[in-house]
Every structure is written in structure tokens, then in C-alpha cells.
Amino acid sequence: MTNQPSYVAMTYDAPSADRNAAVSELFLAQHARLVTLAQMLVGDLATAEDVVQDAFAALYRRWTWLRDKGAAGGYVQTAVVNGARTQLRRRRHLSYVPVDESIEIEAAAADADLLRKEMHQVLSRGLAQLPIRQREVVVLRYYLDQSEQEIAATLSISRGSVKKHASRALATLGARLEGQR
Amino acid sequence: MTIPQDVEALLRDALAEQAAALRPQIQTQKQLRILTARFPVERRRWRLQVTIVAVAAAAAVAALVVALVQLSPAARDRSRNAPAGQIILPVPAPIVGETYMPPVELSETVDRFTAPAPDLVIGRTLWVDDIHEATITRIDLNNLQVLSTRNYKLPDSALAGAMKIANGIVLLPIDATAAGGPAEILRFDASSGRQLTSILVERAGAIVRTPAGVVAEVGHGRVGILDVTAGKVIRTFRLPVYRRLAYADGLVWGWDVATSTLVGADPLSGDRARSVRLVGFSDLVMEPDGYALVLDDSAGLARFDTRTGTVTAATSLSPLNLSRDSAGRLWGVVPGRALYAFDSASLRAVRAYRMSGLDLVHVSGNVLVATDASTGQVRTFDLDRLING
Image (cartoon, rainbow over all chains, first blue to last red):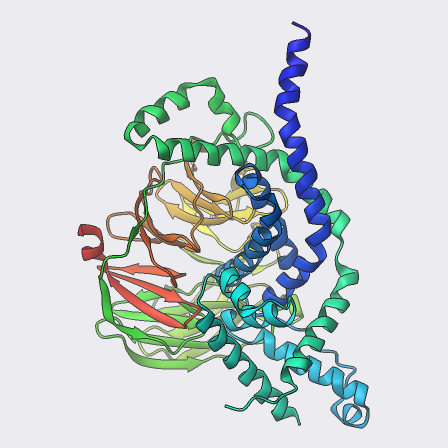
């Protein structure tokens, strides 16, 4: 009788321990990258951290149903992108990119490094003001280096739609850059 | 359209630089501790989901299964709350099978938006807020003709609440305090759409109508009774607010996200009348339903009876927003899944229509208005034909 409880506990805890370890390991490996991805989509770090937490919590809940554990990274990344979109729609949040006030246009024109920084800032602000879908495509393409096919799979849209959103986004961002020149 | 050739290279650089600047602020170990602390609660939620699958698979005997499981001692394990004896979640409602949306879409569509929110219908006029474009657009629901579009001033990092109407004035809370900007409640004339002077506050976001007047978030942990006609705050009282306020059972309800506590206050006196801990709930949205509140966090809906302090129904589905039809059903879109109609008492999904590209919904009479932020569209559907097949 004395052994039975420990046996029951082992059969119950062993899968949980595996799941805890596997999800924690994936979290350590992917967290920084996914928080950055989420921050680029939602615009603030606190919300980005919440989105990533919820994505990993969902992964944890569904871990035993995940046939291909190797696909967990892709699953959680898609969950982050979807979670970011949900947050933006629920909270009706307009993304925010802090402006580095120390950069002055005059100085930037005289210094290549400052000019580059200023152009980056124009692009970052422009990115934050893109419609949600265009922003997602741009971040997946130019931050995560995903192919059109991978982006289409992540966002559950066609490759044609990916091309359309990317083209419009680049045109908008290009126009913003031109406006600064 | 010609794209400057260096845009792509600049974009890669800009995003890499943004990532590098962010990296020192990311505290992975601390976040891992937060996540692992959630594991026990998530295991309980997982059991909930297992139960849902089991119930769905046995749909023919669902009622019997539900009754048996509710009677079993194991039902106690289905609580997603850590402390025993606080809130016991009931067995989640079975989920109806999804079908494709029948051809009930009305022919007209408005596609001039970026992130439309169909908050309000006044008479047959739909009011759409587009925070991305900082516009309020009035649309005739009879023919989807645009009646007027007004731009409003929107600071960076603004967070908008939902529009509400009271005394012929439409209110729209805008809060940019996270970025050091202002918070204000914008006012518009309901008949003409003309913008009136704003009500300046310390925080803005949630608004609810009560018999004692319009109650709105006006400061950190503080709400105020508004004189919407004069455009001023009459008096304030303390109440935690997180995204939404609701009025039910004679009380204004707010959510304390830090302590996972639902707090009810008397809007007349401002006195706290009720306080209920709901451990396991996080990102809470409340929809009043008589003496009950339909609570929605990212893990699903739950119906909370304000009189008994119990959760009487639950589902694992978490729609983006909820809108009630004349029969009392709650409609909402679960992203990536379907448009659902829920029975508000049991939270059973009574209809589920697979339809891509919808997000926020608003029901007005026999019209279901749905928006799509991906395409910037406002679409309308014949609700009678949708329900009656």
C-alpha cells in the first residue's frame, strides 16, 4: 500500500515533468527572438511579453496533442503573430516607436552614421503606422527572413496576398524615406 | 510604383538595430519563472480542453455526459483556480461543429478603413472608429453609404476604448499616457457627427452607462461620473479598471489585474459593495447580462453570477469581442476559427460559421456588422437568414 501512492504520483508527474522541461527549454531558446518579434508587431515591450507568455502557455496546454514536437517552434511563433494581432484588435492600440530626440536632422545630414540612424527611425515609425497585415509581412520577411511561402503559412493567407501586402508596405515605407531626403 | 532599391536593405538594418536595442531589456529568466508558475494552472486548463474534446466526440450523449461528470468528484479538479473553494469552473459547454457561412452577406461593403471598429449603431447609422486613421465614420446601414468622416487628433501610442452614447453625445476615450501623452474623452454630437470639446482626464479607456449616470475611467484606479452634456467630470471614486467596466446587479464592476479581483461598487455612493478573487483569470473583458457578467480572458468565456459569486458556465472559446442580438445570443469571432453565436446562459456555441477575414462584430436588429482589419472592410450580413438558414 505504501508504494502505491508514489507509483501513482510517478505516472502522473512524469509526463508533466517532460512537458515542463521541454517547454522551458524551448522558451529559453526562443524567448528573446519572439519577444522582439512581438514588440515589432504590437509596439511595446510589456504587451509583447504578455503575448509571448500566452503563446507558450497555449503550447504547454497542447503539448501532449502536438504530434511533431519538432514543430513546436513554428507553432509558438504562429501563436505569437496571431496573439499580437488579437492584442492590437482587442486593445485597439496604435503602435508606438519612441523617437530619439537627440538626433537632429541637420546633424544627421552632416554625418553618415547619424543619417543612417535617422533613416532607421523613419522606417521604424513608418512600420508602426502600417496596417496590421502589412506590418506582419514586413517583420516576418525582413526580421525573421522568412520566405513568401513561409509567411503565407504563418499568416494563413495566399502567396499572392503576401506579395501584395509586401509591395504596398515597401511602397509606403519608400515614400516616407523619399519624403525625408 | 517604383520602390527605392535600398529600402529592403535599410529595413533589414533598421529591424536588426531595433532588435539589438531591445535585447538588454528582455529578461528571459524572469519571464521563465513567470511561465513556470503558470504551469499548474495551465495543466488544469488542459484538462478542461480534454474534457471539451471528449464531450464533443460524444455529442449524441453530451447532455448525459455533462450531467454525469458534473456529479463526479473529479469535476472539482476542473477548477482553473489555484486556491480550492474559491471559484469552481463548471464543465465547459460543448462546441458546435463549424459550417461554412451561407450566402447571406449583403452586397454592399465599405473598404476605406485600416483598422475599423464597429462600436455603435444609432438608429440606422453605424459609427465606425478607425484608430489607425484617427477617423470617425458614420455609415447609413440601409445602403452602406458613408454619411460623414471626421478626423480627430491622435497622439502616438494611443489606446482607444469603445464608443458609447449617452444623452445624444457619443463618447470615445483616447489614452496616450503610456508614452507621456494626454488622456481624454472625445465627444461628438450623435445626430451630426460634429466634434465637441473633449473631457480631459488622467487616464481614459472604459466607459459604462448606469442609472446613476455615465461612469468612466478618469485616473489610475479611479472612475468618475460624467456630465456628458456639459463635458465634465462631476465626482470620482476609487475602482480598479482594466480595459472594461460593466454594470450589473446595481453595481459598476471593475477588474484589478494585479490581484485578479473583480470589484463591484455602488455608482451612487462610490462604496465598494463586492470583491471576488478570480484566480486564474488574467486579461479580463466583461459583458453584462442581467445579474451576470460574461467574463472573457484569453483562455475562454465564463459566466459569473454576481449574486452567488459562482461561475455557472464556461467555454474554451475566446472571441475578439461580443455583441448581443435581440434573442439574447452573444456573437463573436474567434480568430482563425469561426464566427460564433453563444447562448448567453450556458455559453454553448449554438452556431459556428467558418469565415475568414472577420474580426470585430456588432449586431443591430437583423444586421450583423463585421469588420476585417486585414482588408480594412466593413461587411454586413442578414442575421435573420443566417439564423433561420
